[in-house]
Length: 355
Image (tube, rainbow, N blue to C red):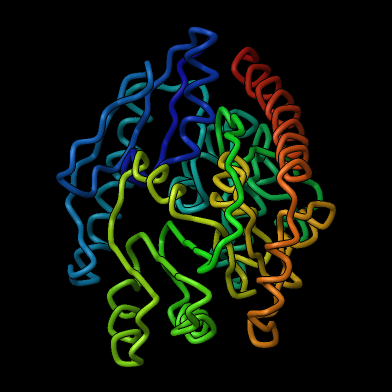
């Protein structure tokens, strides 16, 4: 068994999918290194047995763009040097950004000896970018995808394995509150500012609802917008830690898993989907999205067209949900994830064992 490196251009705490690999490798006593970019000064605990190798270059949202690009180029050079120095036999490349950045080295020296972990659509509309991506898919040992919805944008010739954006998905039963106001909650990176403002307009000052946002992104802009509009039933906070999610869950009736249907989100299965399953939270998803298609047989997901839906429709759907039915549905979904994860683990261990 040769030396393995897992590589990602992110802080450890943002590499949620890293643990899909490390937990399996640790369980099978496989040695590996984790190459990552430490972008801030917050120290996060190491939760894997592999050897961490970090590139440290502090960035912020307020940093000039040229400094961010410089950091990216320096990190790329650091990773290439580490890969050559340590003479890894196999690579696991986390996200398209990592795979594209290292593609000259990977396609020259690691054909059929790397895993391409594909989590989101990025710049596939650019022909040169898409061409490199197709070469990576063609020459990967396999491509780990977080949503089957991405395949229509990618080469049909790839060897794809579904790798859900979750780990150890144990379903925790949560009682359904039949009282108003109904508490609708979002947590995660707050993007799509214009769309989020329309969500605020839909529920703002409707006393039948409380709308809460937790996370970084355009939160400050939304807070200013809500203040200008005089919305008193909308709460916005900032950065949180994973352990805070259980606090949010206690104050949530419906999970806001709703995004505008544009390139990145239309075909995705979001991390929040799995939070909803884990905590048995009914959720709102976008009409005509892959998420609607994927969840069409489950009552816990309500697909809506934000512009057309009436708040009364959401209230009626929510109060008609039965706890016994939801409990069975969430467990059925979790069982399917478990089966998919078994296939992923088998594929990963075959990759590790092949020299």
